[in-house]
Length: 239
Image 1: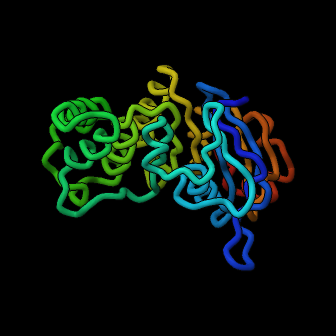
Image 2 (image 1 turned 180 degrees about the vertical axis):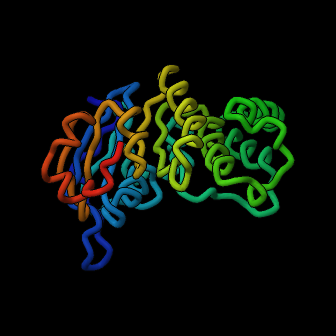
């Protein structure tokens, strides 16, 4: 069985079908990209995989075990963590507080504080431990979201548009962190609209449109798929 296996996952909200029988697998140590138009169901898919909402139908397996219906905090302790498009934190927390809270998933308080400081340095936020997230630049907020994931000692990270809003120059730092994590054995699944990032990082890409998987292939194959071009790329294919 694959390291992460999504099988016929369907999610309905009343009469709206947000996800329709989506299936794919991710090998251990792989970087898988997920792309699609806004509203295609990508974030809903991440919410189902990470335990934030149950599927209407279908199953998710992680490292050989069924995880459908398991709460996000328990999944974090198993090594599966997700990021959010917008940094999720409390207004009065410092960046060190935020990352320490994430580190507490695996460590006692004193060790968590020390490890959080180490992680902040690792992602390029050293010296900003006492700043609040609201005072950070967009690039630093994205790095903070990555730091939260790293602090949980993940085995698999679901990254939800971690590059959104950044210039290509600003994507250099998070891309380097993702490559480093992956080189250390961390499996990455990333939803992303910045095509140059996906093309450079992903070994395979899954394309979602109107809640359905319409393609799955290598980056080179995806950009030549007419269904994908019609549904998503259009004038955006400028990688």
